Structure formats: C-alpha cells, structure tokens
Length: 450
Image 1 (tube, rainbow, N blue to C red):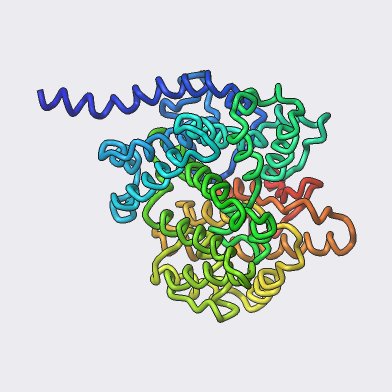
Image 2 (image 1 turned 90 degrees about the horizontal axis):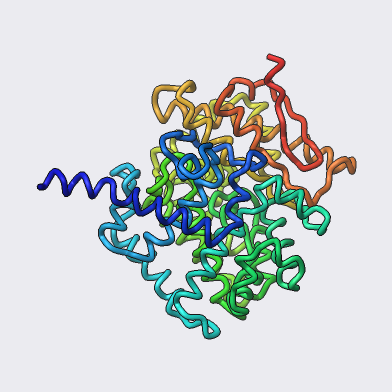
C-alpha cells in the first residue's frame, strides 16, 4: 500500500499539470503563438525532450511554450502554498541551493496579498485572471508570426519588452482588440494594471546588472511607485513567475531557477526599486544599493572600478559566494593586459549606449556550463571570464563605433542571443572576435566557415 501511495505521489502532479495546460491553452489562446517554429527562444540551458508540455499537446518541442506553461504552473504552486506545492516547486533544485520553506511562504504571502487586495473592486478570481493574462501577453513578442501580423499596425520594436509596451498601448486604446481576446475580456481595472505595468523596467537587466543606472529611469519617471504602488507590486510578481519558469524547457513541473539565491537577489532588486519613492533618491542611488549587496555576497569592493565590473559579471553569472568572487578576480587578473584594457574601457563606458545590451548573461552562463571548457565549476568559470569578457568587450566596441558613425540605431539594443548559442556549441570560436551586427542589433558569428 505504501508503494502504491508513493507511486501516485510521483505521478499525480504530472497528471494535474497535463489537465491544467490544456485548460490554460483553451482560456488563453494567445499561448498558441508560442507553439510555432517562428518563435525566437533564449539560447540558455539545454532543452530536454522527455515528455514536455509542447510535445504532449502538439507532438513537437516548442521551448518558449514550455517556459510559459511553467510560468503559470509556478504561479499556481506559489498560490497554493502548501507543503506539497513547495515540494513540487523545488523538486528539481540542488539541496545546497534549494529555496527555503520560509522564502516560499513569503512568496505565497505576496500573491495572497495581491489576490485579496480588492484593488479597484477586483475579486480574487478576477485578479488571478489578470495575473495569468499579464504573464501570457508579455511573451508574444517572441513569436515571429505574431510580429508579422502586428507590423501593419506599427507594432514592430525589435526588443521584446518594447514590443509588449507598443502592443499594450494599442490595446489600451481599444485598437485591434482581436489580437488579444484574453485582454479584451478583462475588467477595466485589470486592463489598467496590464497597460500601466507594461515595460516599467527590465527587472532581469537590473538583477544581472546588465546596464547602468538608467535601468531604473523608466520606473522612476513613470511615477508609479509613489502614485500607485500596487501597479509595481502586481507587475513585479508577474516577473517573479517569469523567472520561475525560465527553464521550463528543461524541467516542466519544477522551478530549477527559483532557488534561495534567486529569491534573495529578486528581493534585493525589489527593495532597490522601492528606494526610488524616497525624496532625493536617484537612479544611481538605487543601483549603488543593489551593487553593494551583490558585492557583499561575493566579497568584492563595490567602490573599486575593477571590482565593480567583476560584481557586474558575477551578477550575470548568478554568483553568490566569496569563493566564486576569488575565482572571478584571479581569472580577470590572468587575462593579457591588452584584453584587460579593452574590457575595462568598454564596461566602464556603458553610458555611451542609450539602450542596455541584451543576452550578455546568456553568453557567460552558457560558457560556464559548457563541460568542454573544464571538469570543474571553477575551471569553467575561469573560461567564461577569459573567453566571454574579451569577446563581449570587442562587440561593444564595434557597436559604439557604428553608433558614432551613424551606422546603427541608438534605440535598438545590442542582442547577444546568437552568440550565446555559439557559446554552447563552439566556445573557442569566441577567440576569433568575429562580429557582425545586423539592423536589429543582433550580434552574429559565422562559425560555418570554420
């Protein structure tokens, strides 16, 4: 009898998920845009093909669809908040980094406060629907087919978050509501939450320190935190669910990503954002607060220029221990002086860019996880620094030169996603510094020639 009970415990969550995913697709038909070969997926992590949501539903693997399913599944596990939900949410996590039970309880408390807020008269069920809709619609810019449909409507920003903001602006004006039936059926207060919260800030950029203090500017200038802080609270929790589902293509029913370290990092980002409500607090103050915390975790000095860069790199690599900080410092110190010089020059002058480069962390993480670069984590981390930083710095230099010559659009962010793919399959290619940048800001390498 005990054996049967254990067997059922293992398989009931998967059965429940299969039932839920079909219901979600039925309720949010926009999800189908992610079940398409035209969808651009993030080149981070190695996809698993063992019975994923997309394979069960469509007979093919669609990475971003699987991520979406885990985004929604994570929301509901956090909402449930039970011991069973905690066990399921953390099932795929390593014991040493597992999200603590009390941290999961804190997330449960946050979503309960949101659902039971009665914000502008919304019931808990209406608020849950708003949260689910926000999670789904934020990803539509990844679909090439959906983008083609939107081109004639002048919704065409290359960057996914900019695209989402343009889409929400159209929907806010009740223009082309047929594009997103899930938005159309929402009550007006729920629509307001989605449109006001669209692209408030790129919280992922802040978490991984991908840019400078201007990452906080849009949030500060919006006036949302002092004026209507619930919009920020709602929007930030949708981001939490997005982070939790980031590796849904690797494991479908558990969050590999949302560990205790991730929880602490996102709490630190949230607190840094809230600092902006204080009179006289600038974007630079908010950034310094977060950089200081990240520096403490890996024992680097946030006031030292070189350590500042290594803190930034450490955030991109999701590092949290002093031992990892030592590896970073030694790896950088072992670079050729000429390479150190270009890295320092490019990373310390990011204010020359109007937009934060994207997918730089994916390059570094894929290098650090590439088993061909070393048997130990320390070896691979060293290679991530010594292969990744010089290449990224070189691409930044090329981009800045193009901007100075008027050959690139300053409003189009540099995109390293294709290079992140190369970091998984041919990491030594980065030594060539080969770099072409297209009109959408995508950095490309032609490894087929070699």
